[in-house]
Image 1 (tube, rainbow, N blue to C red):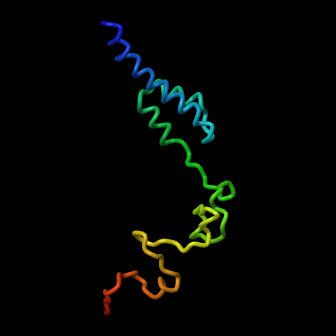
Image 2 (image 1 turned 180 degrees about the vertical axis):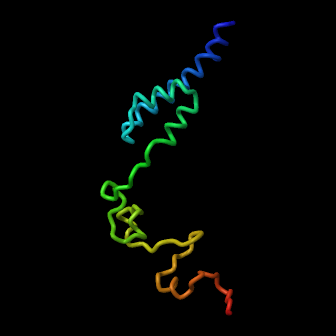
Length: 120
């Protein structure tokens, strides 16, 4: 077998396994898991071991005190970062049209376009 073919057939899969193991080793402490155990599983159980790690790791909990964008008390605007020069501007609606105020939205529950009036 030629060396180039051997590198492709053996080296590339080993690099993928090493990459999976390295990712599991680095990421496992963030989820309170044993990094050595999951790196070994990811390396020695090809492909299935890495996916087992991905599905077994715990989900991260959301902490609003650590979120830099959740500063407002208003739930609608808490996640939006607005540049200081644009704070006083009126918001845009769909396709760049002017957004309706809250009073207009309450009056038309389904937000139908103009000219469509459905009465029961």
